[in-house]
Amino acid sequence: MSIVRLLSAKSTPVPFLDRAEALTRLETWARSKEPLAIHVLGGDGGSGKTRLGVELCRRLTTPNTHHRGAEVWQAGFLQNIKQSDNASSSDDASSLLLVIDYAEGRPDTVKEVINIALRAAEDPKRRRVRIVFLVRRPAPLSATRQSSNKWLDALRPQESQNEGLNRLLDEASTIVLNNEELSGKERDDLFEAAYKSFTEPPGSPSSNDIITHLDNPMYSQPLLVTVDAFLNARPLPNSRNGCSPGELFEEVLRHEERYWAEHWPSSLAVNTDQDQQTDGIATPTDAQARKMQSLNRELARQAVAAATLTDIQDEEDAISLLQLLPASLGKNTKDLAQWLRDCYPPHMNSNGHSALWCEHLEPDRIGEHLVVSEADDLEPLRRELLSSSRVGTSSLRTWTILERVSTDPHLNERAGLILNDVLVEVTQAVHAQVVDSQSPDLAAGFTKLFSAVRSHIEPDEAHEAEQALSEGGYFTTFLECELAQRAADITRPTDESPEIDRATYASRKLSLSRCLAASGRRDEALETAREATNLYRTLAEHNPAAYTPDLAGSLNNLASCQAESGQQREALKTAREATKLYRTLAERQPSRLHPPLRQISQQPRQQPGRERQAARG
Image (spheres, helix red, strand yellow):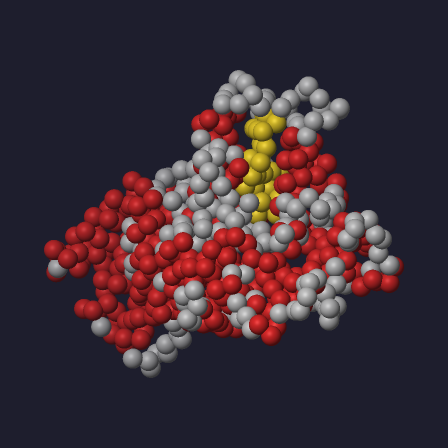
């Protein structure tokens, strides 16, 4: 079988360590009397979130003497649970547990699952409904919705009308596995148990001298301890003791190559010379050696990295993407596509159909290591995957993986430069799909990738992309804000700079202020609004015909920021100045300036209390 599958969170041979009694705490929470409850498991990749979710499902669904007869649980990860109203009454389970992985990148799914759970909890046949969200890293949130729990904030809906969901999340429990580092004894115990499970035959103890290195800080989480135990239990010829996660993962991939070779098609073999055949009866070792000789290692690594980097939809999609790999030139890509499917068969739904052509390399950190190691050869593929034509549900995985591996400086630069070339078109495609679907998932995923690589994005490209987000509303608020921040990241002009440069800078600061305000970052919005207003005031003094309208608009924005920050007196004074300018301009150019004037006069209807007076002028 696949070695990386053996190391995955759902693999039975890998021992489970209930450090800090996290599983015990989760089971107690799950069996509590509340009809509906939510729990968040936070932590970096390899910290054990998925395995903890797997073990909780097993614990709840496995009959035992203590809880026998008390309840029947239906528990599993989201892809294994029917996502419909049938979850409320179509089975005899009295209790329901839903586990959602990568929840921080699936805001629309979070909302949908909570709504499903609410409906299920209303069924009198249900004793309890539980949701566990697995969050790999916290996500930025508007200041108006920040709390002391950043892992929980990663799940909060962006739209203001979803305060009901926010209140439910406020009551959620949280365990952050990053804070639960393995103790020295836990590392030793986990290594020993894993080593015994991986040896052939199982059960052979390890020698004391091979665990002395476990005090290294990189072994603070379970994945690397388990990987190290596997590599010691099943050493390959010329294997090297890794002193970094990357070296350990590379050794695991050496094992995985043997699995690849077992399935490698003869049409892609790189060594078929008859003189390489062994005379007489071939031993298993000889057969394995010949298979390894026939494996095109370079092509195999590139193909698996490609499958890790995106959700391949079908055979046609697989062939078209694999043709972009340098090592596939002149090769039978149809057989290569089938090889991928044979090695990593897709998950089948209840109807016997698969949503994807093949699955990805797991655990994620090993797949991400492979993507980084093959970065140079994946350049044509990355360019295709980041194009506007690929924008859709499948692009979420590409953006997520690239965002995670962007800690590698080289790959960060390469991905950033590609994105810079297509930023406007991709933003337009994201905007169109977000407006059509009324879902923030695409915009949220793209925002994270853009934030990770934005140092390689030209400010002018970011400004043009920002202009494409005209009708996205709250669905694209954070993307628009990130674009505006990069667009405004230009050198501040001096008093001697050309007028056009000063006007450009002022315009981008004004736009940034509005975006910051829309995302709830009031203090930053106010500071930026003041800067923009001061710049426009200077420009209007020297060229009033050209810049007085801009000054009036900037004053109007400043008044709103002051009112939002509780500075009612200042807001009233600023709004009066803006209104005076608009009235004067309206007398001279009525057709052009009546709409802004009406907008100011209507602002008080949208603001409560003294803020109405501040905007009324």
